[in-house]
Amino acid sequence: MELDDRKVTILKAIIKTYLETGEPVGSRTISKYTDIQLSSATIRNEMSDLEEMGYIVQPHTSAGRIPSDKGYRFYVDRIMQEKEQEVTEVKALMIKRVDRVELVLKKLAQLLAKDTNYAAMISGPQYHHNKLKFIQLSLMDPHKLLVVTVVEGNLIRNKVIDIQEEIRPEEMLNLNIMLNSSLNGLTIDEINLGVISRLKEQAGIHGQVIDLVLGEVAAVIQSEEDLPIYTSGATNIFKYPELSDGQKASQLIRTLEQKEMLQELVQDVNRSQEDNGIQVYIGEETPVQSMKDCSVVTANYELGEGIRGTIGVIGPKRMDYEKVLNTLRHLMRQLDATFKHDKDDEEG
Image (cartoon, rainbow, N blue to C red; front, top):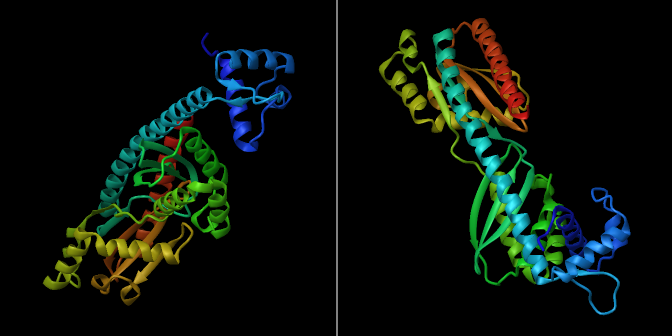
């Protein structure tokens, strides 16, 4: 006899309840699940079938049932299959979105440089104040653990870590449930010592594994990867005599080409400017040494879910500020409309 949807639902409810309580599970408990909506008598019949099939057992003379090894195996395979499918779908969606973002940002940098006659830069989106959305632990072999972490904005990171002890399937399932129920929706600041101590206590002999996993989760949430920055119009600098001096021009061109200094500028903007307003740096106010003879006008764009990037225009101190400000405001509206349309299409 194969498991139909009703039996699968009841088996999952038994296992989840047993993992949470450690007590044998009766039909009355299962009947309280809002998504089952079956009578206790019907549930008892289904539980009898599940017991006959070897998925649950009745310990001693208790009226309740607990999962058998066969039941745990079915549940682990089923839930991992579901989560792997979910992660695969999220990855496909984000690859599509990232490709779209890169194409749009490169084009907008070109338009910005053309419209202003100055140099332009746009940083790729960063993920700020990340909240944890999902953790999946899977054994690669008895001493290697795959940690899949998904954070706000559907940023996904995979890391294989070495572990000393062996973890049984039902223990792995319990760790997954425990980590997700305790950490989902938290930022790195909210995963404090109290939360960590509670998790390690619940994990018992696998407290060391929890330590290793939480270290990887923290690294993902706080990760400062190389920030993609798209530039255009560097040669426009030569149109302005005060910037076209050989040494000044070569320093500016190198800054726009090498990107490290622009990353420093973006980080400074993000530290001092939390909203989506426009900021103007004039001469010595500019945090990048090679731009001290320039003015730099920046704005943050927001794509939702904590995803933000920076737009910048670099030109002489005598730049047409009114035109640059108007162009940046128009560009930010374009970005908002473009990605709102993309999001609506995905949700539709």
